[in-house]
Amino acid sequence: MASVKSWLKFVVHSVLAGYAFLRIKSLLRPTLIILTYHRVLPTKDQHRDSEQPGMVVSPQLFQLHLRTMQRLGATFMHLDDWIALDQEGKPVPKLTVAVTFDDGWRDNYEHAYPILHQQKVPFTIFLVTNAIGQGQAFWPERVMQLVMNHGALTIDRPEFDWLRPHLTGLPLAERPLTREEADRVVSNLKQLDDQSIIAGLETTSLARTDPATDSPRRVILDLNELQEMHASGLAHYGGHTRHHFRLNRLNSTHALMDEIAGCQQDLQALKLQPAKTFCYPNGDISEYGEVLVRQHFHGACTTRSGCNASGCDPFTLKRYNLHDNNSGSARSFLATLGRGLL
Ligand SMILES: [Zn+2]
Image (cartoon, rainbow, N blue to C red; front, side, top):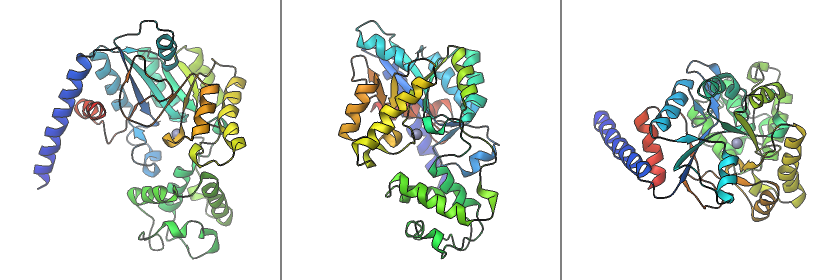
C-alpha cells in the first residue's frame, strides 16, 4: 500500500513539475515569482526539533531551489526594484525571481546569506521591528517549546488555565507532545488574539522554575547582522509589523497604526535602505489595515500561492512558501510551483 502511495505521489509530482516547467517556459507576460522562506537550518540543528513543520529549509535545499530557478532562466531581483519598474511601466525581465525571508531569523544570516553572497543573489527580509536583536522567538515557537520540552506538565495548575481549553485530545498531562501534536496546539491557539497568548505564556513562564524551555541563544537578527548584509548591496528590508500581531485581530485604529506606520518608523530609524515592501503576518489583513499599508509602503505580500504577472496590484502579491516538506527535491520544488499555477 505504501509503495502504491509513493508511486502515486511520484506521478503527481512529475506531472505538476512538468506543467510548471512548460508554463514557465511559455510565459506570455513578464512574470514575478516570489520565493518565501522562514528559517534556514542544517538538518542536524537542534532548533529544528521544536519548530513548526513548514517553517524550515536546509541550506542544501535552499541552494537547490536557487539553482533550479537559474536553470529556468530566471533573473534575480530585489522585490521593491521589480515593483518600482513595473509600476513605472518600464520593462521587467520575462521571468524574475525575488527571494524573501519572513520574520528576521538569525539563521538567515548564518546559513542563507553565505549562499546568497556567493551567488550574488539579492534578497528581502521582512522584519518584525520590535523583535530585532531579541533572544526570544515568536509565540508559536514558545508554545512548541513549552509543550514539547516539559515532562508531564502539571496542567491542572492555575498558570495553565489559558492553555487547557486548547489541548483537547492531547496527552500533555502524561508526556511531552510530539512536533505534530505541538503544531496542533499552535493551530488551536489561533482562535485567541496574539496578545492573550503572549500574556498566557508570560504567566506560565513566571510560574516555572525549570529554565530548560528557554531559548539558550539569540534567534532573531541584530543590527550588526542587518548592517553587514545591507553593506553587501544584496539585502533589502521590508516591514512585517512591530510585534507580528495578526492585523485582522486588532480592533483599534491606534493598534493598527502602531503595527504598520510604527513598523515603517522603526525601519527608517535603522538608517538602512528605505523599506518599501510589507508582508502581512499570517497573511491576515483588515480593510483599514490595507489602507494603512498602501499609505506607508509601495507593495505587500500575501500568503496566497502563485505567480505575479506584470501589471498586477503590488499590494496583493502571491508567493510560494517553501520548506523541506514541499520542496525536498528539484521535482517536488517544481511541483509546488506547478500547484500554484493551476
Ligand atoms: Zn511572519
